[in-house]
Length: 84
Image 1 (cartoon, one colour):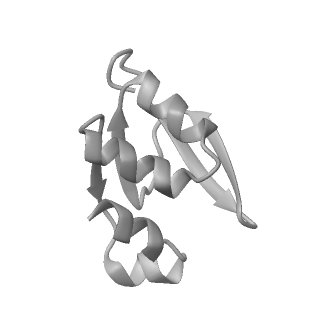
Image 2: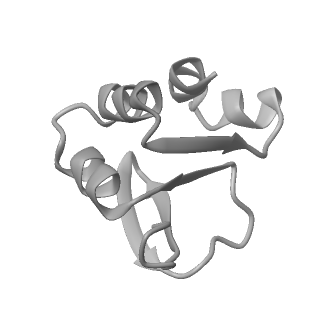
């Protein structure tokens, strides 16, 4: 979160996301935004739609780190489509 200089990472296991404080060891993508944008995303019924909305509003920045093959293998292509 950019406004409080805190870092969190989310991992997905069996389609269930888990978020903890700290940097990811090998991230696929990096999202940067303030607390309000972040809370809005996690409270949304559709995380993908909320991410797209925050990106469109300029409240969130996205950096794709992994290549397309890795994203496809992990099932993240719909998220990629939202942020590109």
